[in-house]
Picture (cartoon, rainbow, N blue to C red):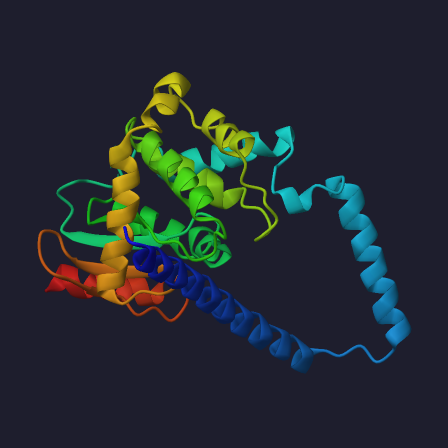
Length: 274
């Protein structure tokens, strides 16, 4: 790629990160304004006392490690159980969760470090998996789009690690574990030890084969082609979605909430009836 091409790619990644952060800031500001309307503490002394108490409690409870995003050993077992309950028993193939013959396909463009993607993963997604994927009506394809991850090489490494788990039909176990244990944005928590720690939590994953697969250049090519598909669709933020009948054309899915699955349900039902 030429120097101009590199500059353009870097600018595009920077624009995505800035747009994603702006969207999250707008959401946070809206939620804060709503909270202020509901209740307002009138004494600054009370506010300060509560804040100090909360900070002390959090530091004590987490041992000061919350920014690193690395869970305690006692928490990893709970996460593994939750992820297994969510996707266990559902067919997986590479980046796809669900029956290959499912009549409707949802393409989910995400960045594993994106906190808004985590909202979807813990919010609307479980209902979609339970009601449509398990019943064979829907399959979901996870695709990569860099928005929240600051360093391109870190982004490629974490997304390729997920795709490598897909070589053993366990990509969705990996990405769900990542989102469940996601750390604070821009805190640098995604290290090689962190990625390996996630893999160790995936039941049945052959770690030696997984490590070898991470060096497969084809997986890095998939990350690049996913970004190209996102650009073609006009996506600048994550999560973003395309939906359509399997084997047919897809269209952008406009959602009203990432925690309430209603808008996703409506789009799926329309395609099933059509």
